[in-house]
Structures are given as C-alpha cells and as structure tokens.
Amino acid sequence: MSMDTAIPVTNIGRGRPPSLNRPDGEGSVQVQLDPALKIGHAKVFAIYGKGGIGKSTTSSNLSVAFSKLGKRVLQIGCDPKHDSTFTLTKKMMPTVIDVLESVDFHAEELRVEDFVYEGYNGVMCVEAGGPPAGTGCGGYVVGQTVKLLKEHHLLEDTDVVIFDVLGDVVCGGFAAPLQHADRALIVTANDFDSIFAMNRIVQAIGAKAKNYNVRLGGVIANRSDETDQIDKYNDRVGLQTMARFPSLDVIRRSRLKKSTLFEMDDTPELRAVQDEYLRLAARLWAGVDPMICDPMKDRDIFDLLGFD
Image (cartoon, rainbow, N blue to C red):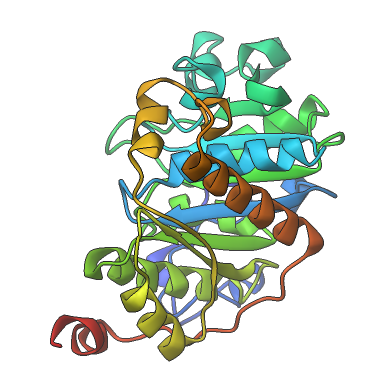
C-alpha cells in the first residue's frame, strides 16, 4: 500500500481487507508504510514535542553531537515551515515537495544536490516540507522523501537518521516518521501544556508500536531549570528523562545567529550544554531499552499537575 493511502473510515471495526486487520490503535485512520521504504541499517530517531518547544534546536545540536562522535548523520525536517536544518546549513533550504514540483513530480529528473545539503560538521540535511495547507497528507511527504533518499543510495552510508517532526501528531500523516524510527524521543518543558502534549505523543507512539518497531526512548527536558512537573508525570506513566537543557540565553541566541551550540563562543555554561548533548548522543548510540508507558487520561493530567 502506498504512503498516501489511508485506512478508510468505513473499514474501521468491520469488514477490513486482510492487510488492514491490525489498525494502529482503536478507530485509527493511519497512513500505512510501504515495506519497500524501510530505511535500512541506520539508527533512526524521531523527535517529537509541543510546537515551539525547541525540537529543531534539539535535533540540530543532537545531529552535531553524533557527528562529533564520528557518525555519518542525516537530519530530515518534517514541518511545512522547513526550518529544521536552518542552523546547520545557515539558510532556508528548498523542500522535497518544492523540488518535486519543479520537475512536475518526475523524481527521476532530480539530482542529489537538488534536495540534500551538507551542514555543519558534515551533517547531511533534508527538508521534507509539507503539502499546501488543507490539501494533502504529511505522511505522503515523508514517504516521498525516504523514497528519494533510497533511490539515490543516500541511506546506505548513513549511521544515524534524525526526523524532526512538527508538534501536532493527531494526524496519522505526521505520525508517519514513527513507522521508520527505532526510538522516539519527546522534547518537553517543565510546564502543563508541554506535558499535556507529551502525553498525546506517548499515545501516538503506543499506537504505532502495535505494528512497527518504534519504541519510546525517553524524554528530553528543554528550557527547564527545574524538572519537578516532568518528574511527577514520568513517575506516573513510566518514562525517564534522558537529558536536561536549562533556559539559557546562549541557546536562544544560537538560532538568531544561524549557528549550532557547537559554533558559539566558548563559555563554561555553554560547554556544559555541549557535553550534555555529547553524552545524550553517546547514550543513544550505545542503545537504550524501550520504555513501556501507560499514558494518562486528559482529566487525570489536570488532577496530577493542575491543582496543587
């Protein structure tokens, strides 16, 4: 089944074709993965979190950290805003959808340099982009991106693939990177809205884990000087914080300067953040056990965090 084919609503719960007998969660209308589009031997991580929480900053610096460990890294931005790799390449790159449109969707006419750009420290960068608002599915975009990368043999020499995904995972299309990932990481801050979004993401990962290899790898606390609320939630559902990045002005300024944190002027506090990214990359490369979590009901999150 192609990436742009969803399970019809009328098939949910009755009379499914054999290939649809195991939906991704109750009442699911999910985009299905074409088995031919499996990425291969690379370790694949999908970065999720509430919109504006710092997923692109986290993804880009984690990509650099992997590259500093000597790994060949590919970062794929999965957001119509297409700014995931901005600090790596120092520019807004054309998206896969842009370049496909330029050749009237004749993918065979594309060259590698049309949609893959080398960023800081050798990190290879792709911006999948997204369909025009209200007109298509993000899962199709992810599928076309992986298909192009495979056709050009770009995944054969890659050690680590990082999907940087926009914050809303209600749509099955934008949950599509979970079909490729080994581990999903959730970026959150120490506040109610971020943790509420994290709980929804835990649900999405659990749905995908029914039929795919993806498992929860842990939480990255971002812009968080304290983690008491995150810790309270983690303890309840069975999650673990893998790394914590405080609310430092140098992190904000790095994006304004089109720079990763590994390019900013050296200070003790910056060095500590760089070391945390390197430690996280080394831990992920070594392999982390999957976390089996039991997400909460919306009302229960209010009771846990909202009414102290």
